[in-house]
Image (tube, rainbow, N blue to C red; front, side, top):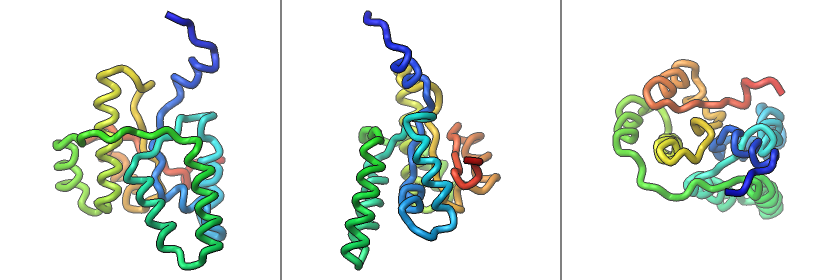
Length: 173
């Protein structure tokens, strides 16, 4: 078996983080109160963590672009989003864990259904990749969604599903 370079070994040990569309959209929104923190967090991608995105998150980004009325703004936003996600890896489509979906539906109804879907993707990927020993530890979910980043919700998601939540707004950059 071929030995890995030091760079390849470092890449393999960086945590994997699924980036919510809220962070990407906030980073591209001039004047948004959390824009600086979101840009700073995205700039750390590939240096401190391996960024991932799911197809549903990509769909949210495209939906936001399609709803923009100003063509110049839409083109600018498209280029910004394109440049960001080129650096990301994709979590392949997988059958989501039904127990996780039930827990999210029954205990986390305050979280938007789209965000529950993203969390279910992270949970299912954690189970799959932990079993196959592909990921360097648990995959985390980064978001600035106010309903998810509440301390009690973060604690309960970690306790109940083992999912770590990262809130770039609360990180010092």
